[in-house]
Length: 481
Ligand code: FRU
Image (tube, rainbow, N blue to C red; front, side, top):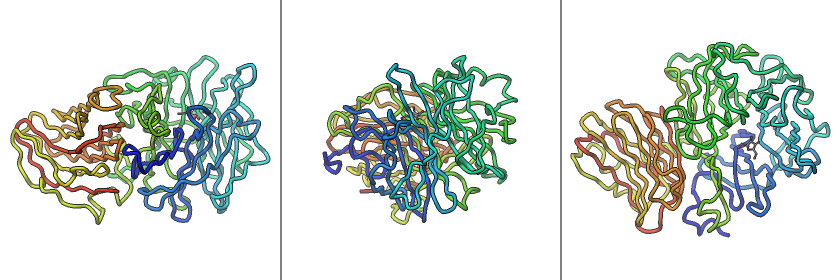
């Protein structure tokens, strides 16, 4: 299989050359290079055994693939080297991950394990593995996805867990040497009036992060996690498993003042995000990658036609503003407001009345970022449309609502979805499109919607259409090949 001959294979989203990719793992910046590891089934679909795949990038645009970093070849990870994180310590990168085992009797066992690397070429499984040989009493073997960070005079590990009563939670451990871990207890949410006491049956992929408030400069503590078994709440959480965050203040044991659980990305596939660890930059706004593959089936055209499936998102810089996360494109070369390669579009500065205009600069460009600022105050509705052959994706904006429709594509799952977005008169929208992946950043990163967008071959067009008057302010784009 040659991904270069596959028109769906993305140019700047990280995707496997073959097999299946799921969660990003152990994201780390070392010597100025971004290393992304990820759940990787090289033999998928025949062989479902999960390794840690590895790719690196200097600009978060072009990714180079390396051989897998962790093979599930030890007794404690023989049924899968599951998700985990990375930290830089003493010049080495330390990866904590979960070893998954299914016994002959069909019982699940979960082990927290360590791999270290001094050069990110050789990865050494620790002689003390497993470091944590299973869950503490009171919890089931759904015990996985360690996140380790430095905290005061110790290291803190958060692990996704399931109580014996089949409700989800996060367990917190401490260590002074990254090998011996002591259970502290459950991560508490004392001010949430019990809202999270019985919130889903298993909390996957917890990440407790410090994120700066872009107005006050204060740092918030944000728990991002994926509580399996939580159904739709309003327009949100309509995927098979939800992914969201709670903002509060961490006191070492409890996340105080916890607000509501907010969906991180409203699209059809987003899940299991992580952020890059970077020694010496702990106070910087974190940069996140998420998995775009949260679906009950892997039945995408890329798998049947070209033997690979799923991608990660573009990198997103996280800040807090007005009690909510903001997500902005973190790769300078993918941000039309900073990239030297960005071009101003002919539509900039124009006023459209009840018409559709094709953005000619993007015709037959299947990998690009479009950045528009519009005044929508005199439009009853307007839309962005990607079209090719008989297929199309439409993004329709109307009075603070966005409806994304992919029903007329080669992967129509989910069809149409409507979410709330800022209804401001002046609205900034960035549309990232990369072959078969699309991400929308609405209202300067206030609402994000990602989706797989398998269009047909044929002439590819991007157009803006409006009912009423739409004033286009700035309009710029970057194309990538
Ligand atoms: C989330 C997840 C993790 C697990 C991994 C296995 O998508 O289920 O909880 O570690 O994927 O691949």
